Image (cartoon, rainbow, N blue to C red; front, side, top):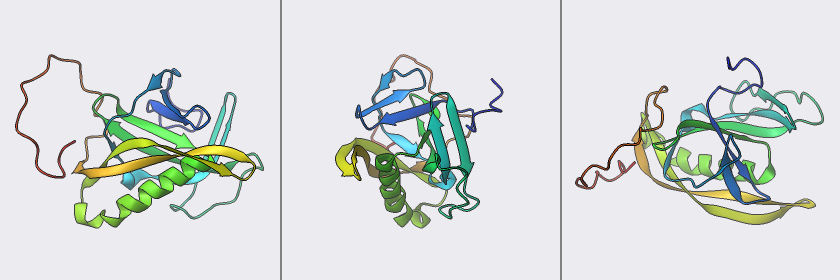
Amino acid sequence: MLGLTGGGSGLPYIRFSPSMNMWSDKTGQEIQLKKMLFDIDNVQTGWLLLEAGVRDWQPDQELGRQGPKPSDAHKRGFVVRFFSREMGWVEWSSNGAGPNMGLEALYTAAAKDRNANAGKLPIIEYVGAEAMKVGKGNTRKPKWNITGWAPRPSDDAGAAPVVAPEPVAAAPAKGEEF
C-alpha cells in the first residue's frame, strides 16, 4: 500500500511474457497495447531479480553503467514508464533477453530524435514480437514503431475517465497525434 517494499515505483505495472507472446496487467489479465508515450527521460538499467514473490531491483548509478552484481540470481534488466490514455502511467520492468533487446532497440531509435523534440516524449506503438533463440532458450523481442512526439503528461495524470465520445475534430498536427 505504501510502496515501501518490492523496489517498485508504486505505479500500476504491465508485463510482457515472451513464452506466451502476451502483454498483461498486474492482475494477469491480457491487454492489447495501443499508442503510448515512452518516458525516455526516466529509463533505468540495473540488476533485477524476479522470482515467485520476489522482486529485487538494484538500479545502476548511471544509465547503462553496470554496478556490482548483487547475486548470481540477478540479471541485467530495466525499469521504464509508459503513458496511455487508457491506463495512465504504468511501469514495465524485465530482465529477460528478448525484452532487454526490445527496449534497447526502442531507446536507440528514440534517442536519435530526442534533441529535436525537447520537452516531448516519443509516441510508440507495439507492432508484435520477433521470435528468436538466445543461448539454449527461446524468447521474443518486442518491436515498436515511433509514430511521433507529444508533450509530457503530468506525473499524476491517470487514465482518462470513460465518457461519451465527442464529435470527431480535425486531425492533430503532425507529430502530435497522441
